[in-house]
Image (cartoon, rainbow, N blue to C red; front, side, top):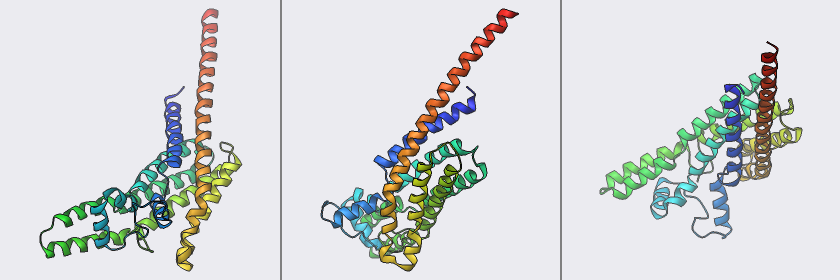
Amino acid sequence: MRAADSVWMLSYRVGAAAALVAVIIFRRNLAAELSLLAGLGIVRFAPAVPPVSAAEWFALLQDSCLVGLWLLDIFDLANYALVGLIFIALYGALRRVQNGMMTVATVFCFVGIAVCFASNQALPMLALSKQYAAATTEANRSLLLAAGQARLAFNNPGALYKGTGFYLSLFLVLTAGLIVSIVMAGGRVFSRLTAAMGITANVIALGYFPALVFAPSLCALPPSISAPFRLAWYIMIALRLFKLVRGTGEAGRGAARCGGGDSGYRSGGA
């Protein structure tokens, strides 16, 4: 087996495992799930309505650090990192089907991930909240509140309009997923059902943006409706990537056996 094949097999294994972890543990929008459960009264340790102002976020982070970080979408960082691993594997699997489109999709995905990490305010807000708690003068507290509000202007999970960073990262990653799904439909590496599931999930999720503009009260519906399709898509991707690993490994072992036999035959003939 060539070294390049070994690298891609490793990426398939890692990508498949990442897809399953993204399904089971670090799902996207875990903060929204927590808020929903709190609003329904199922959980009592989180506020039913997320904070909006810097002062409210600081108070929550000081009262319950984990809940505050959760609602500030810190787990989305894990989800986006896992998505990056999935896309590396998908590029390897589909690069021969449509290299140009897969390159565009991969670039979109990693730019979106970079924007997500740069704009996520969980850790910066935690640091500011600690400074705010330790501040001894009203002037210092006012400066820290202003700094917190400036941070939230980039990404505020508690606000209706969350911020440029959130929207840009989400749009790029969803668009990348849609492109990959279209490439899947044009090849034989993944099934048509897998492609259809990906197209459905990403098209519905992209409906978040028109809803945000024309019907803000309904903007939570597209992500919620698309979630089951995305989970199914990830599971199908994981299963197929594991099969590719097994298939490549078996082909490599078969080639090695054939090559060994042929070599022995030639050696004997000489």
